Amino acid sequence: MEHGSYQDQSQATFSLTDEDHTLANSLRFTLNQDPRVTFCGYSIPHPSDARVNIRVQTTGDPASEVLKDSCQDLMLICQHVRSTFDQAVVEFKNKNSLDAINIGP
Amino acid sequence: MEEQKTPKISVWDLPDVPKGKLPPHLEIQRTRVLCTSDAPTHTENIRYSGAYASMGVDNSLQLEHFHDNFRLEVIRLNEDDMEFDMIGIDAALANALRRILIAELPTMAIEKVLIANNTSVIQDEVLAHRLGLIPLKVDPRMFEYMSENDVPNEKNTIVFKLHSRCERGSSRIKVLSNELQWLPRGSELALSTEKPAVDPTSRPRTYTSFNCSQDSLPEFSNNPIGPKHADIIIAKLGPGQEIELEAHAVKGMGKTHAKWSPVATAWYRMLPEVVLLQEVEGEKAEELVKKCPVKVFDIEDIGKVGRKRATVARPRSCTLCRECIRGDDWDKYVTLRRVKDHFICK
Image 1 (cartoon, rainbow over the protein chains, first blue to last red):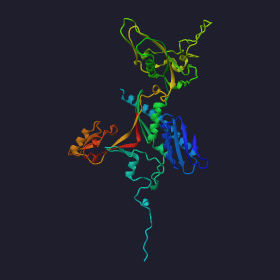
Image 2: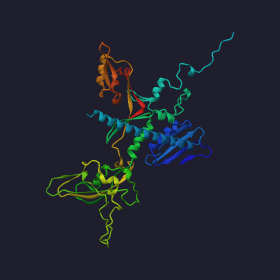
Image 3: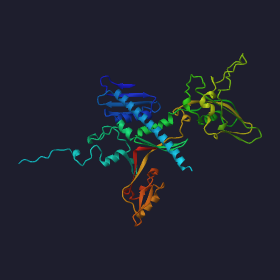
Image 4: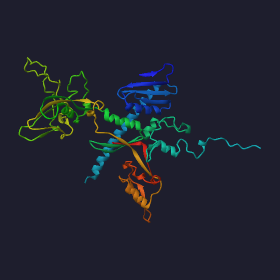
């Protein structure tokens, strides 16, 4: 859900249901990295209902576009983390099995 | 007389000022948390892309920059626990990972318990609660979620049976978790609303409707499903007491109930950095080494004179107890800092 105005597309508040700090803090982080963003923040109106309000103000670009771009960035970051993690685990296992072979008689 | 006018250059263009980088004290502010004796300072992350714009430093996080800098090292990996380091990532993402690990990874746990007979001292609901907390050794990706309207079938339910009695005249027995038997063909308790079947050869309808036995699935045919640890005490029975029940396990997430959380716990901390501001020699060095309870400092002999000097040997094990900066004057010798983008995760 987006609260904004049709005249001024550059600022809007997005209200997401069934979300909490897990997604909102990471989105806020990637939004901050975007140079088109002048202000961004999130708030949780009440901890008992799982609703998050994300506020985005940009330097002219429509706020929904900027939000979508930062979601894509977040996905790419997570994919990179995942592949690096898999690689690191494989390397660790190889290194350990090598050590076991070397230590053996 | 003409005055020679020196061309006006801004101070940032002077040849000895490094361009594109922050002066060292600001760099420390941006990337390290200073832990003084009162409280940690500079804890916020200045990740706003326009910060430091007046100095010509671009603080925004480009993806290529992240790809180049991000490193992940596994320190320890066992079947049950793991410790790894993430370098170059921000606190928001590390926290999101931790929250997802605890709350949003699916596992299987016992949800419904159909009790046929319980004459033990443990109440029905307490017994059901204990059964729900038992960890099961099964891959949750092979099962689907079950919602309210679904019929329990072999794709979303695992059925266990527990039948244990203590004979009269024997001493007390413990009911351990390895007495939970897996029933690959589904529930054996008949639905109570069923009228006696006209056809004696048809199977009575039970609480679950398994179309095929779970045994026939290739993953389960050689490793049966069971609890992860065989020695969990479920209940204790005295002579003459009996428990007979059937338990159904379904897939769920830690968000709804902690029994579905796959990790015992997951936590992270930032890499500590211990910096000696001045040389610490002689007696002071001995004192410093003795002060630290986790032996972060070490003595190193310099030169032939045999003077001792303290060095930082194991900064990673520093627990930030601040013993080394307590007392007068130690502030001038030691500072404690934390690296803001290096996380040790366990």
